[in-house]
Length: 240
Image (cartoon, rainbow, N blue to C red; front, side, top):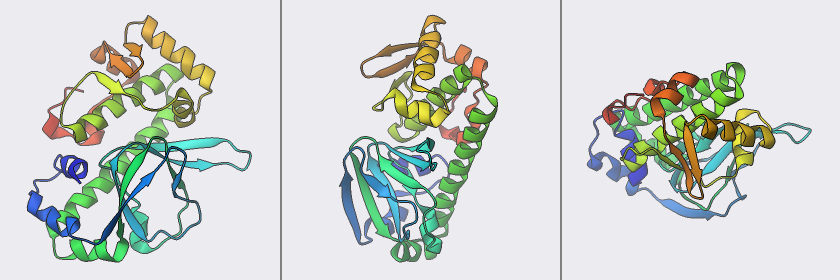
């Protein structure tokens, strides 16, 4: 739960004791290998999940097989809140690295927050941030150029990871192939590769086996119009 606690701590002042009710809930710790489903389209959602470690993707697949990744699920992310209304899933969530999950039954989760207003507010903020990320994804795909899309997503992932790792760094550890970036950005793999090369040539980033280093954060943010305020990470005191 440490990543979830770190993430929520950016939105509200909440003590660790507020989370005891969640820690004490009956839960299962589950592991998914890369490519294994966590949530399938059409299944009844009766659990709330917290990613303890690893990366997953939330996505839809069209009838002809084309995939659109809606967002990346990182350590500390909590989903699927639609389980609180016992709805059928209209999307899928799949592990892209080894993922360790905490699964809590929806009824137990609701009981835990019922008498804890500050905890309920904290999870409301989780939904607020997720909605903001989805809004940026719409703008990213609908209005930004390929170079702007990739730069914007890299900066976003960097800041989201900083929120749970509680440290600011210009390195983005990317444990995912470029094919996933392509499906998230509505581009081909070749286009992503060429665009990343362009970002390197223009001095914005450097690439290595572990991920990507941001060399010119201010310049890249100006180029793609990235402002981190939509992530609501004021406690990190970010400039952008």
